[in-house]
Length: 81
Image (cartoon, rainbow, N blue to C red; front, side, top):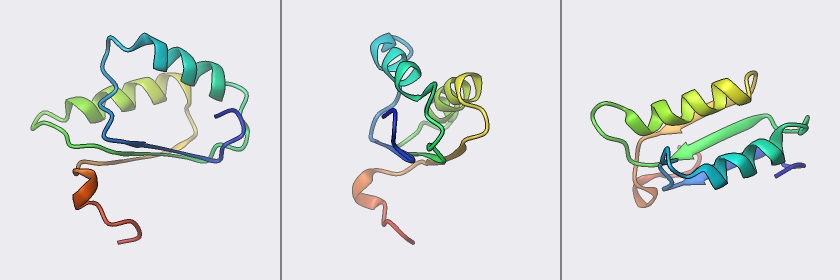
């Protein structure tokens, strides 16, 4: 994580109760100057709750990173299309 240039989350909704992963991400990315893009592929509800959790988390902690959220099941997602 600390040297990656792209992070991809597949099918993970970033629940508010998962403090361990949030801590891991903050520790792993805080000094990563290579990270350019964060991509999430995960189904979302009508309200966009999952996307909003990601936006809130990454906007607060990792501004200036390209963020892309794709509300699809992984099997319905086609990379590069």
